[in-house]
Amino acid sequence: MNKGNEQSKPKTAFLFVVALSAWMIPGGGYYLLGEKKRATVVFAAIVLTFCIGIYVGSIGVIDPVGAVHWYLAQMLNSPLVAVLGYVSASGAYPVYGKPSEIGQIYTSISGLLNLLCIVNSVYMAYKLSAAKET
Amino acid sequence: MHVDILFCSLLASFTSPESVAVAPLSFLWMLPLAAAIAVVYKATKFKSIAPLAFTKACLGPFASIIVFSIVVAAALYIITYFIT
Image 1 (spheres, chains in turn purple, red):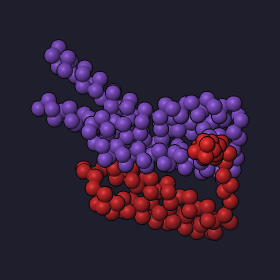
Image 2: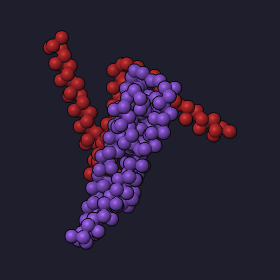
Image 3: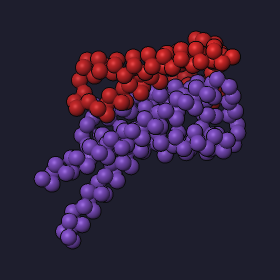
Image 4: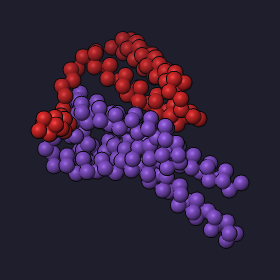
């Protein structure tokens, strides 16, 4: 029983590290697992989508005060989004209408796509560590 | 010097919104997003990523997102036509 717990602790820590690195840098979780091509594709797709969003709508679309729900989805891109949120929280970058709409959709969808990648990389890490055990 | 100016103007472009017209053409903004969704979705499913096979595989979900969006738009248009 104790032996099982001791074995599961490093595995849990490994899964946590994979999840954290996947959140810090899109594709980081895959990179940690040695899936470099997959990491590159995911990084390029998510970062490009996010950049298109803030290019069209400006950094004003990251609004932790007036658009909290969108902000939560945007935060899934990376914790670095909080820095942009801190800058735009002053209200110095107002954005309205269609650019705001498109910017928020792009940045939030890229965040949700990163959530998919975080979950998938943790699942791959779990399968990898389970295969090593057997 | 020129690099500094280029870098600063590049950063500045992220601080003011672009003008996007409220017109039918603005629906084309859906295409890059659909491509990104297709690429990331297939990246999570593919066993080993080879450029050509991966690109071909991405075309499926990309096309299905667009076709389904058009079908939903047409259905909503028909419903609105009969209601109003």
